[in-house]
Image (cartoon, rainbow, N blue to C red):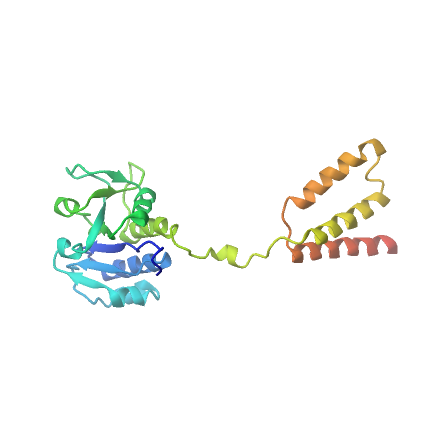
Length: 243
């Protein structure tokens, strides 16, 4: 990590209950580039055999995970702590969304940490008191129950916007075709339409050509798409000559 890159926040699971949930949280973390997991007194001890299968390959997160006896010890080197909870629990603190918190963490000096409470009860007031802010999301007031991995992935995803992660669907996209290829497609189609009288009456021909050009240039065809369309037009031309 270069000096210009923000420090990744630490994910702290306070008294997590099920090994499976720990594994799912690790998986959610690694999906979006977070690797430092800390736990405070996991109920079933650590390591937990149920965590590995649920992590689905996020072994690096589990292998590096550290266990602490108290929340304060887990946060000892962190200057900016955000407690995830749907209620303030009697503690008056600033309230942030994951997006707002991640933006602050990316700009902050020193380590940041995000606290997540036990699956059944969430963070206790004493844990929330250690944080500088509360992190929560707008949620259905009639059903405000997120599981641990869901809560982690919401925060990890917002953090990932501050890193150079590759968008999988964009990685394989080809660049738009050169203008020369696009002009060839337009000329090809215009030539076919001209012979069919498409641009008549003559008084509307220029406007019709502009509209057609707009239709063909708007999608940003890549060179393979342009070649395919030219092939379609050529096939139609051959069929027209045979008939």
